[in-house]
Length: 146
Image 1: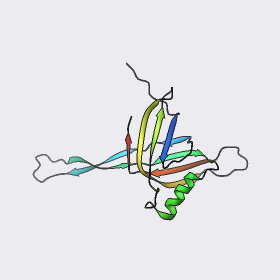
Image 2: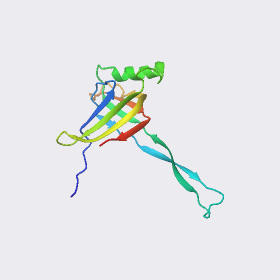
Image 3: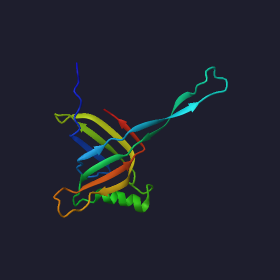
Image 4: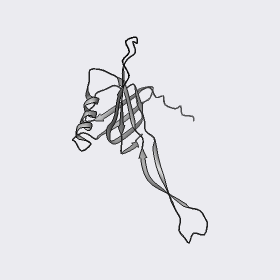
């Protein structure tokens, strides 16, 4: 029986303590496992053995239209002024992908995230486009739970 792939246009992002924002785009980070090479002098073959090393995660990128809410800015400002040792500087969150019927299709949980980059689109008097704010989060770990 064939299974159709999920579509990526229905999702929910929750960040604890609560961040109230609706995002138009979310980037799920890459996961990379470093390779450690090793060779002993008594190995019979002239090749290196490979082992898994440290795991690294890319950034979570959140994009939304700019509104009167300053929650994302204030979180970023907290890290700028007090660093990641401040209370609530590092936060956990989930990205939930919804199926066409609204049920949970997949869930990614990220841990110990903090903002590393905040940007917005430029101002242009001859344009009627919505201004977009982008917040990039550095994370320590991520799991896909479903």
